[in-house]
Image (cartoon, rainbow, N blue to C red; front, top):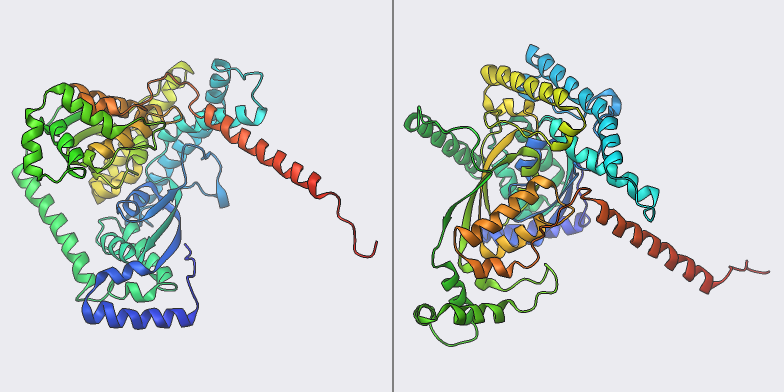
Length: 487
């Protein structure tokens, strides 16, 4: 873990004085937005990465398990986090033995699955070997990553201001997992090297410590009440992958009124009344004007689309959840990862004749989870759950964010699972909520059938590399050969 310096000692001393004058004496928390830092958070489990990325007001860049092979052993060890709660106990040996079997199965399956994809998708004559190899490797990694346990490590880059880091650390220090709490202390140590003034309250007993304790107490109290009041309540396993659980029947009417608000001098209530009297064609006319001619998915309508929203209950594999969780501006909450909801088996695994090995890893994962859950609790047991197992989470968003998420996550290079989730969300907005005009405005939802998700992206990247090389060569030709001084 490392921080990027933002100034010398003089700057740090001036920041300290500013902090004392404004933050401490006047209580203006926003002054902590004036200083930021980069952190490289390395060797983080998938559970730790998701805990770090929970906060909205920061920038995150996560190493993707879609494009990195996990069948090597850097330093003689698998890329695996051992939960501190079981370190040095017989449970550690059981957990590591399971993980070794999972990683070794991953390695044994890699080449047969890659060969299956090569046979199914022969190289096009116009594609360079580098593009084809990268595409096949990405496809193979994409499928096999779900074999790996949630204890698998990756790296996360973070940029945030002092205020966002403070709130992140307060939350991480109250987390039920020891890895997360210990990592928060490491982050605090590094951050104090570059923005010490903005993190003074984090470990003060009457400030940050009390705030973290409040978060811990409310989490534990809510869990206790839920355990008592919902005892015996059961729900069938499985169920729909995506369910629209809440929406506003008059949501489109509200969006139309909001679209008119900034270009009139009428009150919100009066606009609602007038829009209610419009017929469907008139309301559609307003929305067509407001949305305009979108030329690509980055052209988004304004904040009127934030006037209505949707709440989706999603049940999909943890691997796809990791990507959907990155939409932090919406409201997203997830449940503890367990084997209870079953797991996904990609079609390619069946087609390549690798299903038996896949199922053995899943059964091994469930057994190891059960041992850990019995001995140290379900929070710690999450480390042993393979990422093919499903997790339940809720995503609540306004229509503007829904447009962004659905269009982005349905793009051809996306993972098949979250593409499917995006397609279902779009259909639910249109058919269940009945917001057909809003759904129609999402013009860049991609429904194309895609087999090699990364092929077009690799082609574009290769074209950019070739163009850059040609530009450099032309530049060298224009500048001519360099003549040594004195020649």
